[in-house]
View (cartoon, helix red, strand yellow):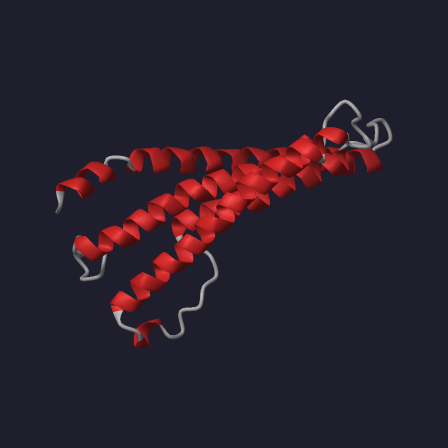
Length: 180
């Protein structure tokens, strides 16, 4: 294996850490979402529990974070929807080039998400507040786009590196004979 790839492979724990942080955030938000919805339902049907007006907007905001962050997590796992019907008919080199092209396009989208997401969060978000929580800026409603774009950039750098690395480093085989 070329020395450059050996050195760059040592960065993998950073990608793993970013992935674990994003996954943890999604899990915490899902748990918070469930608790808030349970409180909302209880407030509607149990007379001594107040029916809070803020729950719907909190749930929607948490769901927007989970949606875009889970999309970023899917990039790392290669779990996005993709057309593979012709993969077995194309040479491996063509598939690798197409993967790099797709990763470059997603990287470009992620960069737009960071810049435009931040612009929207700063401009539109700072001008308003949640209706049921006037003390909370709408910045937090637009910020997940920027955050997910940053995570996507990190995961796309790794994906691009792995695809480029595959041109120079032979793929390892597992005991079953498949690729690792």
